[in-house]
Image (cartoon, rainbow over all chains, first blue to last red; front, side, top):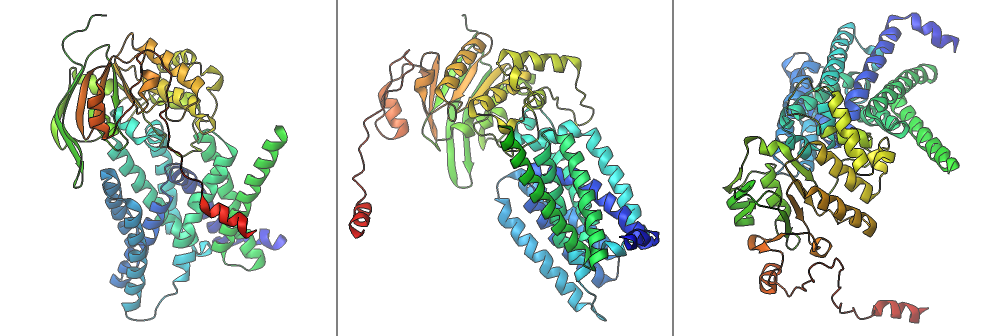
Length: 274
Length: 266
């Protein structure tokens, strides 16, 4: 345990901790909307589709995260337009998008001349290698998403709850959905940094589900989601340090355990009340 | 109850299709102030689609929907058939009713004192006071139904549309619903989509029978031929004014022979 605290004097450990807090803010806000609006599969499509942008940027010799960001935002806009038209069943489209993104990403990286990079950090993340620059952008975006959600809270909730009714009230549902999806896709790409494309899904779903198990009011749900995200990211980090495990899987598996414990204890306490 | 001649909403020559499948064809319909209209017809006959077009949620393929007032469309109360939200959605009954007070603005939607007062009053009038802090996901079908009506009323509607309001509620809730709608109809017109006309028989003033096209639109005492034409099969008509359902005789399926075999095997 003392080893854990002495590790905190290292820069990379402090960065990883700050990164975890920022990831927790992003997944509490965007994750909660993604879960209650049933956008989990869509978010999976965006995060995996973003891999194509990442590979293309790698091939062109520009910052891979920039490529992923551009691609994620553009695909979020495209998919949202399809969904708003409601004519095409979206899940098959998302499935194709998902696979194509991964395939194109790997292909781009494969045909890039020179030494082939390790794909594992992109897929499963490595929060210990997070850079100051990434932390800066994560801070900026976390603040922006808090501000955006605060200003549009009622509208976002109304659209998430019942799109038809929101439309009937005259709300610009298309614009609100578009902004929500752009916010989600930016958050997804920034979170890929810490837990990777595959495991970002876990951070978007587990903390909000813990929140939903503990609270019935959306702001409180977000607060619990934030707290549980902090517990699992920091806890996962500590576990990976102490047991010499990769941080991404440690974070996710700790999250699943936390969710199971919360669900189980809720059921137990509810049934003992009756 | 005197009726003004100008309809609140006029539907003219309306057609709509999903892809190649024509769902609605050449529908014309008027709804007047104080009207109580039931839209009936078989499942998949286009009833919900017709209402969604009237509400402006779907765009008609051809034809028109005209509201008498410019602001008319903003003041439509709508109670959908299915709750489309996630079952565990983290909103209380009060929060949901409050969404009825939203305006069409993108920014700056503050909850005013008036919004709170109106919401509280509606919650009380529909007998939801005890449930107001309960999450909507934990309500029974009848309770949720009343919450959806409360939300619709919070918009201060000039007309109320209800899609299959009897579909998922018990008979006690049906009784309450009928009373609520009768009371509301003193002020605003009500449009009910239903395949179960019997529960509304005592209140409904007009019936529109829709199956792809409009087969009948007129007084509630309708001729059985037009109903048969719409449903494509003989339909039992129900006495007006008695809200009891008389079930038609069902031809029983012959007993399952595989089960007998199973018993023999043992």
